[in-house]
Length: 393
Ligand SMILES: [Zn+2]
View 1 (spheres, rainbow, N blue to C red):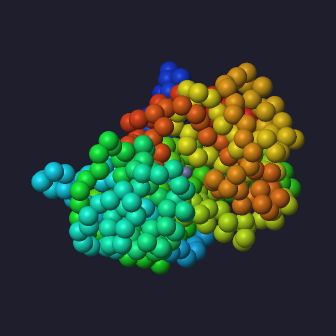
View 2: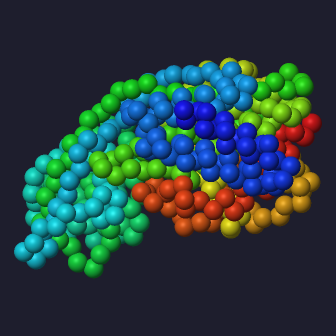
View 3: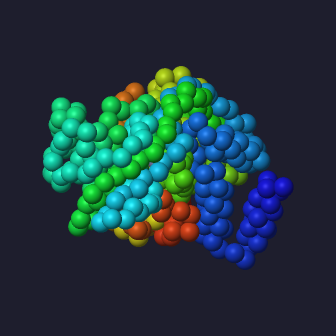
């Protein structure tokens, strides 16, 4: 039923292609994929959402005429089944809202009890850390002083996931002028050893000598207790781009082959992309380059390119395509960093760049990163640029 409705929307989009501008078709398709990918409740490994995501990507690629394959690997992920926090302010207890008042650290272990809150580290207390010390230094002091629980005020709550529990319970809490007298917690977690997947498909080019890799990670944080991390910009937007590009290029004549790869377990430490370069379906020295999409839902403030600063020749080649389409957005050229799936490729000697679009409300790893917030400001010119790059002999 759902697949039929997708076919309907896309075929309507294409049949109206003569009257609808191409840019509108593209944005409608991107929005459709993002909405669909966000319906899988955060696409966290160890949850049904990851399996639904893989099925969706595979079915979509198959419908376009590809023969998608999967690559499986084992991951360990620390999951939260219950997260309840109450605080005593004055004589009243108040429930704190997850994602708004606090967020547990990805490696926060199971914990249950009530603690007095103090701003200095004390045995058997919760420590409200009013300090500019690094998180590592704070953890060390807390362990030495027998602190039971860490409360770290932050101006922005950013969630993460971890493979296993850490030594000390830690909550990031929304910065406020006063701190509570007591805190009561009930957090239940377990470590799940599960299978994760990469899904990829190959598009034949006119020359079989070399190929591109276009990648985007599909996983996100899933759910932490009752809070869902939808991951619209991170990275349903990148996967949507990958799917739209795969569809359009299937109808074009590509000079080189293209591997379209949706990576798993990026949020757990680039595990899927490390796995792909360890057992690639083609020789890595045949790859012309790798283009990674992550965070493509905005673009009001331009384009960031990670890896451009230290691969000038490769960057110049890709720049040429942008000059040909006459698009001149502000560019932020950054050095290579282990911040997304281009990194394992670069480590193995494959030229690799990570593109993300700047602007928007800067929701990141929080409960606000939802489909309706994406503006797709630079989506169409960016897509055209990437198409031009991949179609240039
Ligand atoms: Zn991401």
